[in-house]
Amino acid sequence: MHSPVSVVTIVKSRTEKLCRLIEQLESCNPLPDELVIVWMCSPSTLSLAKSEKFNICLLYTSDAADDL
Image: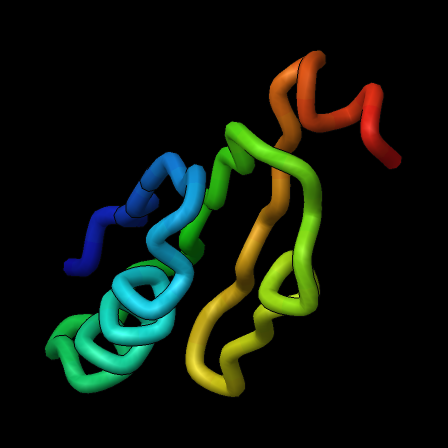
């Protein structure tokens, strides 16, 4: 029996590491059910990150949301 697993990460300016994290999570067994990304800065093109293997939920801090 598989218990649901969520991975939570915060992102400020290290978007290349976020890409690497997503790739690594996609190769995990078992896969996480979701990746929650909390953006600590203004959104970028990676704010629309997607995975074919699990859901990605995006959250923004109030400072980052002010820049939307």
